[in-house]
Amino acid sequence: MRQRYAFLLLLPAGILLTVFLAIPYVSVFLSAFRVPGEGTPYGDGYTLGNFARIFTDWFYIGQALNTMLIGAVTTLATLIIGLPVAFQLARPELRLRGLFYGIVLSPLLVGIVIRSYGWTILLGNNGVINRTLRGWGWIDGPMPLMYNTLGIVIALTHVFLPFMILPIMSAVQGIDPSVASAARSLGARRLSVIRRILLPLAMPGIQSGCILVFVLALSSYVTPALIGGLRVKTTAVTVVDAMIDTFQWPFGAALALTLSVLGGASVLLFARATRMKWK
Image 1 (spheres, rainbow, N blue to C red):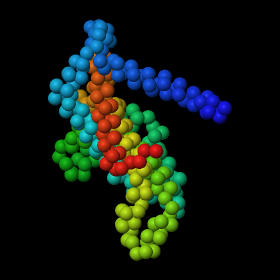
Image 2: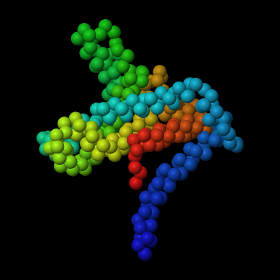
Image 3: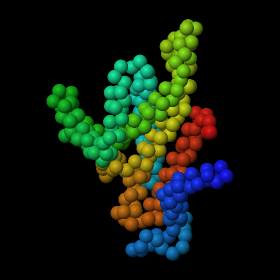
Image 4: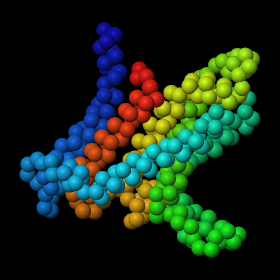
């Protein structure tokens, strides 16, 4: 009887996951093997030619590697910035903690399109940063902060920083403060306490934040499209171009599936390297 009630409780969530997650993924998987059509999304039959086109063209291979690099650098940048912020926000004695917490969450209250356009105003050749540096006499010409990988990483770091801070902060809040106090009372230095006690105990939050930011950075479309322009295109941007601009649905699906496999393999390698325990 209890199992029947449990099944009924899980049924709505199962239907939603099936309709909005499983079926679209199966559709993309099947579309990747369809023959491209002329004037239609698909032709008759199935083929491996879409994947052969990807793995025999160094343009798409290099683009995929650059996308992975952008995701990795963005993850590292958010980790470096977000780790000390998360540790500070997790301190119960921190004054104005609610205000700082609101500041961390404030970027999530603004649409990603608006945030990306804001970075175009800051990073452009005639943007705020370049105008300020020229006004101070530090540079003679504009610094190339936009339409390159650097600009994309800067914007993505700002966009996804809260997704790194929040999991780490949650993990740090679960650490018993007496553990660190006991280590200090036994003569451990502050850096030793952080390196040998606090960081290992906060590792689940660090792992979750890294995986979340990496996956989001890989699949990001709006920010790379606006900041990278036509000079730097990630695989996600090319997928949208293939499906909407050139109407090559099978090739776009093959690119999306390839990016998903690369991202999933990277996440598994990271989980294995950091000895994540799946529960």
